[in-house]
Length: 273
Image 1 (spheres, rainbow, N blue to C red):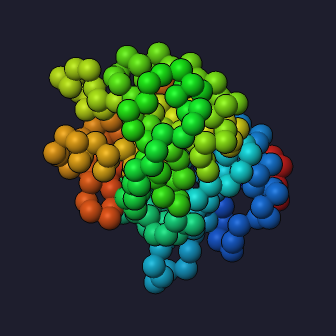
Image 2 (image 1 turned 135 degrees about the horizontal axis):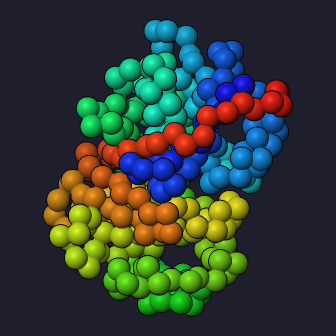
C-alpha cells in the first residue's frame, strides 16, 4: 500500500504541517484499530485515509483523519494533503468532493498550484475566560470563544503578535479546558508583512503538543477576524516553528481555506490490514 507524507499550507518542503496520506482501494475502510495503529506509527498530527466512492453519488471519496491518539471530526491540512495527492497523481482533477464526519467537503485545484478547501464555518460563542487558562498560557487573555461541535477548541484572544509567538504554555494544565484544544490568536503587528492575524494551536488531549498549521482552526479564525477587520478575505499566519500561511475567505456558513502543498516522502506501507 502506498503512503505519502505531504507538507500542507506551504510551498516548500520541511515547512507547513506534514500529514500522512493513504489512498485505499474501493470497498470501505479497514478496521478502526488498524487505522489508528497506522496513524500512531506515522506519528504526525494527522494521517488521512481515503477511498473512492461509486460514481453518481454526492461525493467522490470517503475521507477520515486520525491523530496518533484518536479520530477527529474535521481536519484541514490533511484534507489539503489528500487533495494534493489526488491532483498531482492524476487520480482526480478540478474539484474533488469528500464525504467526512463533518459533512461534504470540497477541494479545488487552482492554476497557481494551490488548493482551495470549502469547509463549514465554525459557530463562535463568546464565553467567560475559564479559570486557569491565563495562568496555563502565561499571558493576559482578552476574550474567549467556543468554536462549535466539529472543531471543539477554545479560541483565545491575546494582546499581540509578540505574545502569541513567545508563549510557552503549561500543556498539562490546558488539557481540561476544551474538547479538543486551544487556539491562541492576535492581530498582525505589521499587516504589510503579508498576513492579517497570527495564531498557534495546542492539542495535548490528542497527543499533539503544538500543531504546526491547523486548517480547521481557521474556520473559526476567519469569522473572528473578519468581524474585527471588516473584510471577508484575509490571510492568517500560524506562527509555529514550521510556520504556514492560510488564506481565508468567509462565505457565510462556509469558509474557504487556500494553501499550497508539497509531497516530501512517497513510499510503501508493508503491513496490510
